[in-house]
Image (tube, rainbow, N blue to C red; front, side, top):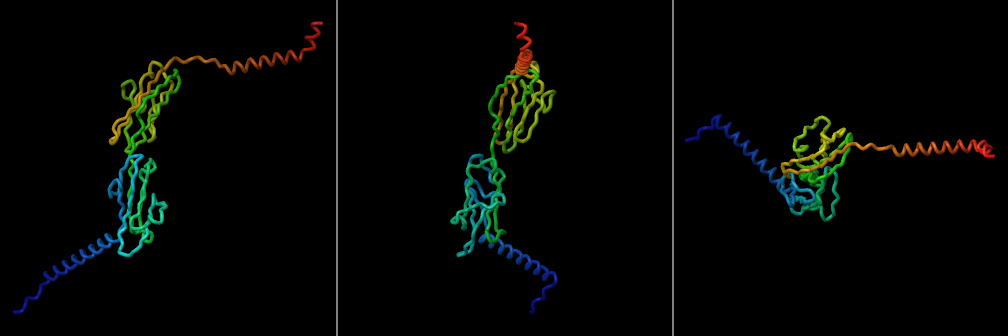
Length: 264
């Protein structure tokens, strides 16, 4: 018996399966190339994630591992925010590393990239997320007079960002309440009271920052307000006395002859 010829449906199925197998084989080849000649950054301490979270004043080592074929000598370069990082000659091979210490506010958001010098398409990057609390905790005292302007400063510079609230004698303050104005610029929360009134504005002001990572911090301001002291304008009075004295002295000098005749 002769085998029956393959019908059109079977032939179409074979073509589709052949196409799928070729695609899978191509992906396998690409993956193999990436694994043998790729660039990968590791962090110590940390992980291989694209975002590395560290604490302020800490340190982190970034290690760039470059997989190459045996006998292949490839040079690696590091970039910080697209600016070239200076490396020692013996730190440019398959395992190049850099250390960032101590971590500062300026390191937050910095992007470090490791790449092959002669093929920038082979690269890996990580971003530093430097966390730090605001310097809110503490206390201050102010002795003010009526009609003066009170300015209280509360540090809110933190990562992650904090929520700021103000209290006065136990009562929550709105951003603008009468003569009380609260402003924030992302670094400092400022409470300003214009034309202080002894009965209305003396007491305890509290600035509170709330962070999802670092919790709550409070700064207390004890403000005393007394009656305005009447200050005599000492300098203008002294200047006036000097002018009068010099005028009299000049008048006496100009009439010295007439005055001398009177005593003869």
